[in-house]
Image (cartoon, rainbow, N blue to C red; front, side, top):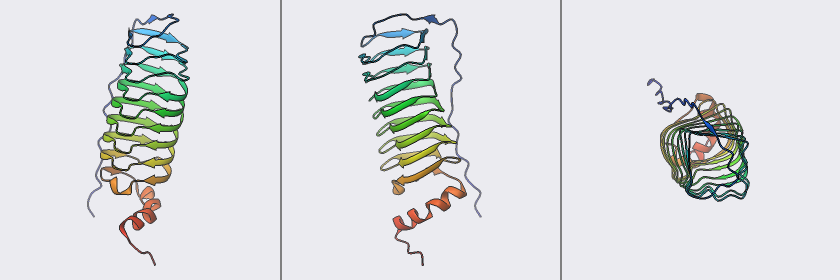
Length: 219
């Protein structure tokens, strides 16, 4: 028997935020830059944050109800306990960032870019990462109703101890997508699974789907 291939784990940059300045700005407009700032329960509801930069910031308990986030850039930033019924975040950029315990409904983050990012805990109804460019992303201990990676380009992404309703991999390009330890009920895009790593138990659950895809009759 050939040895099992070990996937390469996501490479995450440790964050060390120091001497943050508390932000008490009541107005948030498009194209602003926030550097080294601490936001305590900010309300971004209805705000237009298009092309805004958050550089080495910490956001605690932000609300993002009907917030326009298109083109926002997060760099070296921590986002704790965020709430967004609908997240309008197409073409956002996430780098060296940590997201803890998000409560997102429909997170429309298609065409986004991700590099060295961790999402830990929380509940997301629909995580739309279609056509995203993903390098070094770890999602752990999260509940996700649907994760859409259709058409995405993924390098070193791991889902650890997650529960996922539907995982969509159609037309994705995958390298080291580690699903071990994660539960999912439905998988779309069996033909795009090259580059996926899973355990024996998961493979057994997928056997009927794989057989149908390959035209195998089990008698």
